[in-house]
Length: 341
Ligand code: 5GP
Ligand code: MN
Image (cartoon, rainbow, N blue to C red; front, side, top):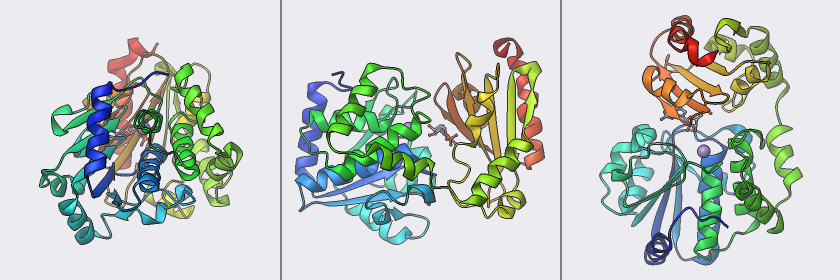
C-alpha cells in the first residue's frame, strides 16, 4: 500500500509520540468532517495505546451539529468558548499535531497562542501549497482524498491501533471530503483504506445514516429555498446560491446545515463552477466554491476571495454585503470565460 511518508519520517513521528506526555491536536476554523475525523482518530488511537498520556483536541470555533454523534466529539475544546483553558493546554503541550490545513493562518484566533509555543508542530494535510516552514514535520499528500486517509496510513505505518471509534471517524472524514465518494476518490489506495476500515469493524450504513439521513425538516426546506433561488450563468457554465442571515434564521439555521449546498449546482449538465455565499454573524461573507475538471477554484479563492483549498473545492471570505459579494463573483467570471467554456 502507498505510504505518504518515508520510513525516517515515520520513525521521527513515532519517537515524538512516544516521548511526549501532553499532546494537542488542532483543527482549522469551521472544522469539517475530515478535520474532525482525522483529529478524533488520532485521539482514540493514541489513547488506546498510551492511556497515561493527555491528548487534548482543539477547534477554533464550533463544529457542525451533524458531527456531534462522533464518539468523544464533546471532549473537543472550543477556543471561542474556553480561551483560557485552551491557551494553557497549548502552553503545556510537548507535541502539537495540526490536521487538515496548510497554514497556521487557518487557525485564526488560535494562531497567536500556537506561535508562542516552541514545541515540535506536526502537520498532516492534503491541501496544496503547505507552509512547511511553520512545522517541524510536514506530512503533506495532495493526492490523498482526505487528511483522514493519510492519518489511517500513518497509524498503520506506526503500528498504532485503530479502534472502532477511530475507524468510524476516519470513514466520516473520507466520506464527507469526497462528497460521499463522488469527488476526489478515484484511486485504488482510497478504496483500500476504506476496505481496511470495514475490516476493522466500522458499520458503513450507520455512518452514512448519521451523516446523510439525519437532517432537520427545516434544513431540507432551507435547501429547497436555496435551490429555488439559485442563479445559473450559462454563458460561464457557472451557477451560484446565496443566503442572507435573515434567510438562514428564517429556517432555524444550525451550524453545518448548509455544508454540502455548494455541490448541488454541479449536478446541472455542463456546469463547471459552483459557488455558495452566505452572510455570517460578524457580517462577513463566507464563500464556498466547487468545480469540475481543470478549472481551479483554489486559484480563484486565493486570487480574489482571501482563501484557498483544493483545485476542485475551495473557500474564502469577503468583507462586503451579500449583494456585493455575488456581484463581485459574477464580475470575476468574465476573466475566466475562456477557461470555463
Ligand atoms: P468548504 O467550501 O467546504 O468550506 O471548503 C472547501 C475546501 O476549501 C476545504 O478543503 C477547506 O479547508 C478549504 N477552505 C475553505 N475556506 C477556506 C479559507 O478561507 N482559506 C483557505 N486557505 N482554505 C479554505
Ligand atoms: Mn480535508
